[in-house]
Image (cartoon, rainbow, N blue to C red):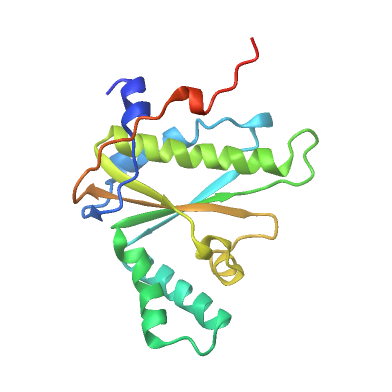
Length: 186
């Protein structure tokens, strides 16, 4: 797949099935992530991979976050939280490891760099025929989840990338008018 086709055709896939990416595919995926723009070569990212029982552990962490937010949460609410990580055979959490005291490299730039690493993961998955979806939601910003994942005070959870084999219908990629988004100062 050539680069422009990859960039123009990638889209989020909500329905993902087994198998998860294999070791070779993951190496390609992570190498793509590591090519993200990176001012002063800080490498302001880390990744946590969840597969198998790891997804269930993540679901328990989500349920704990629900319970801490609302000790009266229903069993249905807690069970729904537990099931969310089971929507794909693998999840990769992308974390921005922010170094707050680096002159000339503000926090925002480091978080954006980690976001670019996440986008590299999505593109590399697509290039290999895999499906992927970037999800955030309230758990990406929850302090219970952050603590459970071992995030430091300066870290930011950029998102959870769900990966797997393409499933379900593939909706056509929307085509947008460039003029709607570009302002030219010629």
